Length: 123
Ligand code: THU
Image (cartoon, rainbow, N blue to C red; front, side, top):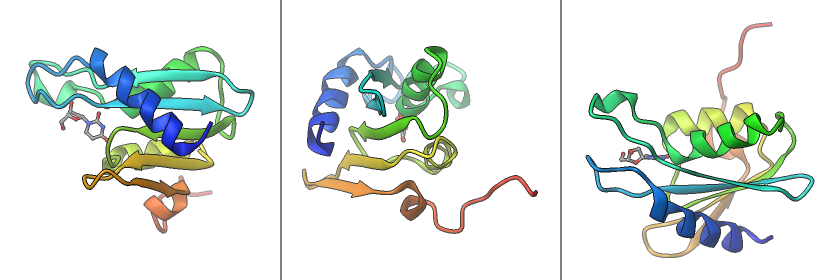
């Protein structure tokens, strides 16, 4: 599945987003190394900081099915991931991250490029 195809899947998933406060619908689709796909959407809350991003619900769905870090080949997102989600993408050792830029083009990165000198627990 190409990055563009994964982003298209995330865009379809975004229709199910629960975003009554921002009205900004986000979708994310996780492709595992064994070919499974898990979708996620942003889920907001009236206590605004408690809302969660689409990337987290997608990775959470994969984790619930037993997927572990290094078992995610790619993630497609409808828009550029926020800083916190970049840390999640790094933690899960996602091989390739694709998202649609505001100008409509597809961006493709390795997570380390999205989070240079990323934070790790001290050894
Ligand atoms: N959002 C995501 O789902 N992913 C991101 O990477 C950035 C932001 C959501 C959170 C909130 O529900 C809405 O977009 C507006 O910030």
